[in-house]
Length: 346
Image (cartoon, rainbow, N blue to C red):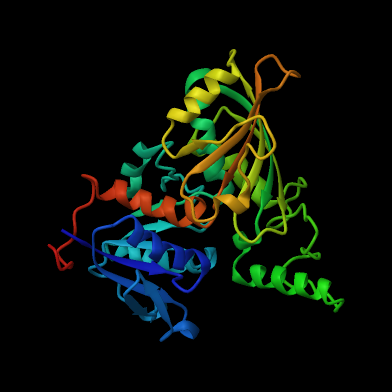
């Protein structure tokens, strides 16, 4: 039994990773369709080692008979085409920000709130959270289960791949020009990103927060617990792939470092790398291509009654986007969604 799957935004960083992840996870497909904008029509993208897909035009594609749509084309495009696909009977798993805070759309991290997937029928859409939120809540969930979290203060160190291929190209070109003593031009980012840090991701809001920071606050509440208070500072760093976060957590009751480490080691999707010696922690460069959320530097925060600090690292293109979407799809087909009459397997 297989499914017909459409990958929307197939030529982008996340779209290509979605195609790779479908193969790696051995997702039961009968057919995979690669979709993108008109300017990408006819381009080829890889699906596994042996299959090449020709990109089709999203604007003219008929989603009738498609079981699952993995969307990552940008929020404005998803706003138009995700409802069209959903209306045609395709279950949309959307990686953009467009539907995350819609009360009728479940916002899902499978290791944290898989039960929410069943709510998809209200709109036929499931939202994939922000990359920085995903890795944080995966690490917070096992700790919240044993000691209940009151407050989180997080500073992120987010790679340029989270802003797309143009951002990665800009870091590459700026770095080359710095070494070649050539002029360095900032186009994608408001300031130079090479050998620099930029405390600004997404647009500024009236209260001084950026939209990225707001996402981490509100998405954590929707996914994990609405009573948790979150303060975030999101920073773009000159790293190509892999997000890192320094997370400070205040709990309602005592929790020891040993309890936290034990709970995290047992948690699905988490790997603890925490040796108190030089190099005994995870970095973004080491997490590239990995599907786990890595937790290091687990230690007490002595400034509050019940506090811990942790360091959290993950590949933002995989667990922060493509893998989380495919994991949602895997949960969806596990006793919830059967292939439709339009599929070859039905």
